[in-house]
Amino acid sequence: MAVTNYGDYDAWQRHALITIDDGTYHVDMHALTETIEIDIGERDLDVINLLNLGQIPKHGNIGLTTVTFEGYAKEAGTSDASGSAATGVFDIFAYKPTRYLTGGTDTDLGEAQEIPITNHVARYRVAILWTNDGAATAGDSAVTSGTTYFGKRFVIADCFCVGYKESFTDGVLKYTLTFKGTAFDASGNARIEMQSVDATATALSALGNYTPGAADPF
Amino acid sequence: MAIVKNNHDGTLSFKDDDKKIHELKPGEEVECNYKRSMDPRLEIIIKKKRGGKDGSD
Image (tube, rainbow over all chains, first blue to last red; front, side, top):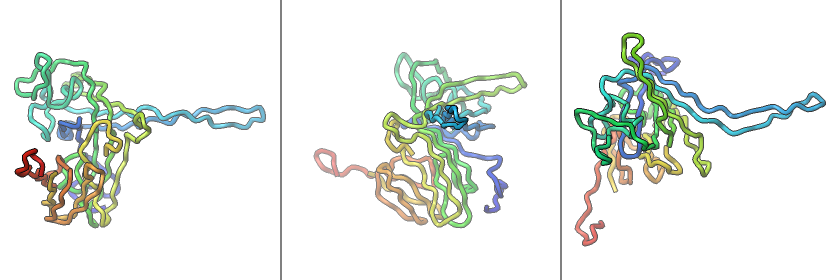
């Protein structure tokens, strides 16, 4: 792996890029985030024991995938327009990025921020990119082709922001933001993709524009 | 319709809205449906509609 100021010699370390997209608005969360946890749903597997002491594996379906971010935000949401770095993430949980509701009207989020909880449930695409290509600035960025740059990206589409917790137990205000989603849509199309590129003549493509519910949301 | 230009000094690619993958050399432009990317190295130039009565090209 190329020598960069990130120190990514034999493993991805220390830095990552995160982008949350609802098809209209998108925010980059990496400047707030300390930890990322990706828990891809398990394939259910059971055993049927036979009287001859043989065993049959009994296959079930794949479970929900959970992505959890822990981070530190000074604001409630993100007040800037599309494409900006997130300054807070409660808007993602309460409604959708950089938006809030005023008297039931969908409005850009300005200052001061007042973000009420709503029953809106937005479908999100969460893209997390590890790369030593310093020019990539977002989770859905491309990785330059050539012998220098590597990249690995996890994408989950049509997932939902199901959890927002805040704790102030260590003397610092920390949030935990949780997304959950299925592995497939109703037609059986994949909602999860893992991508990578290995310093070859081919670049890792920037993701396409996200359309919630699209057959190929990557 | 939009034009995507690679402003970077290396080869970049992106997935168009019709899911076709375009690979662009430095400075290269391609016409496509891709309307929005957060990657500043890929400049998106939305083509303005020209004169037809119905607003079509």
